[in-house]
Length: 184
Image (cartoon, rainbow, N blue to C red; front, side):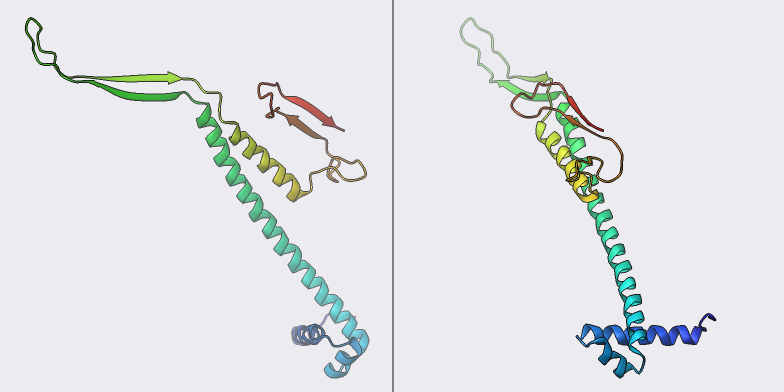
């Protein structure tokens, strides 16, 4: 079969738009064929091509949405990581203590006003809320990309790759060492 010319491709595209419009209005294929002036087989082929195009657009739109959501999660994770790192740093506390001046009294010299600046530094263990937010980011990312175990026991999310889950024990015993659960 010869390849359609540019004008023929344009006519087919315009006909498919018309077929899709009529289909979206709820007309049956036989009625569309009569209105457009083609066979019911051509309408079926046109609808197949239109559905394929719609599916492609849907997949592209979903891929864009997934990429946008993953970028948002990445941003949240970067903020949580920066907060965690700040919360692990030493806390600096500065305060100024002022002692009022005392007038001279009999046998006692005058004492001028004294200002002392006191600085305390104390180490911190870090705020676990930031770790919780980072874990939430990982969980959301896994939900979006389908990284959770499948009902048939395949923990690879359909990828065939090994998934390792590390539990940092952020519950009641926050001093627990990491525990590694392996799923092969």
